[in-house]
View 1 (cartoon, rainbow, N blue to C red):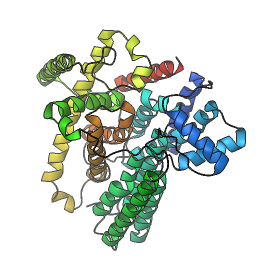
View 2: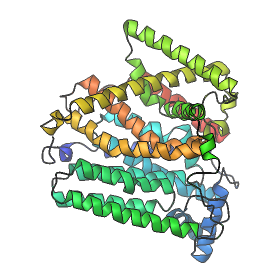
View 3: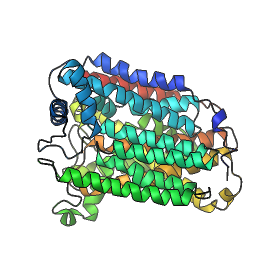
View 4: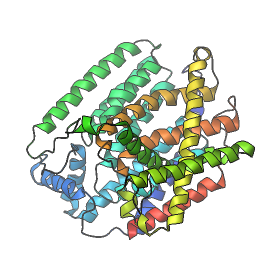
Amino acid sequence: MVSAADDGSAETPSHWQDGLICAAMVAVCVLVVHPFAEVPLGDDFSYAKTALEFARTGHLVYNGWAAPGVGWMAAWGAMFIKLFGFSFTLLRFAMLPLAMLTVYFFHQVLVGFGISRRGAALGALTLGISPVFLELTASFMTDIPGLLPLVVCLYMCQRAAASRSDRRAIGWLASAALLNLLGGTVRQTTFLGALVMVPATGLLLRRRRGMVAATVTLLLASLAGVLLVVHWCNRQPYFDVLQFLPGGFIRMLTPVNLLVQAAKPIATLMLFTLPVVVVGVLRWRGVRAGVRLAVVLCGAVALSVWLAERRELSAWLMPWLGYSLESAGAYAVPVWIRWALSVLSVAAAVEWMVMMAAFCKKLWVSRKLWAARASRMDEMQRRAAWMLGPFSVVYALLLVPRGVYGVFDRYLTGLMLGVVVSSLLLYEGSARGEESSPAADSGVPWVCWALLAVFAMYGTAGLHD
């Protein structure tokens, strides 16, 4: 296995300037929207009220609407209210620095996994200027404040894996767990960083001195902290206690219902990450490409017909989930364009699953090989699998109880991290060759940039309207 001393992370250029440019692009899109309106958006009236009460009283006061903990987000909003006075516009702009930090650190995460300069920029912008992310940036919602600690936690786990000192690696993991516990006070799913991502990284580094004991200690401490926070929130007046297994869940838990509710989130997730995941489809060549395209077309038609018969196919959203697309005016897009995007999303989903299956097979077959000295790209893929694989699986499983009744597309932002990282790593690993240096730049197809530009224009225009 590649050791910390041989990792070479210290010599890998951080491209921090590129990260700043990607973060600035988010600000540009939001400013173009001109979000000056004294009206709430979505559920942010509830969180704005909590921030206002925190500014007035110094206490977290709930109002019967919010299921997230709100936590430090209320203090963040209260700071701006104390300085400038209350307004919905002010709280929207208070969200902008958090969104920019999220995109910046995600860019650094992509670079840390050895993804090329262009690929890292594409991946960071795919997250930052997607319609769902832009809408959340222009509202005082808990999604981005909940996503930021997860991205920073992932960044710290990378630093732990790259550390040459065992003590420093433990320090990075401890810092990641602590930051994630504080960040999770905003949104409970953020706690998965401390409960899943940090322990998984500890298992990855289990051969280091003291790492197993430190990982167990951090997991137990994190679990205790999470239980205390959840217990405190559930005892507060007017806090909307969210049941893990809602009433009637077992009755709704049928194979057909699960399949329907899984198809729409997967299609939505592939659509939001389409500028990245489409690279797998662009590699199709020859007869195999024709066969795959035919299978995908038949699958898309069958899926559309099946969902339509079950009245699960929205007239304006096709097989995608509602919230951001619906509010951004997706119903105004011509039907043939929406259906073409559906086909492309299904094709991307099929190719991504094929690539992930091949990678998991390789991970299983070559696990003994990785016990020896492996290639740099092998090691980066292995780290990504440990840090994001268990987290993404648990995150998706937690959506199942909510999913049988329907979920919003903004719930999928946490899963976008793993899809973007895995797609770029697998694509660049096959394009550059396993033994090539991850620092080397590889070309990104122009179609990816074109799709990114279209998504940015659509997201910006829809949010403006």
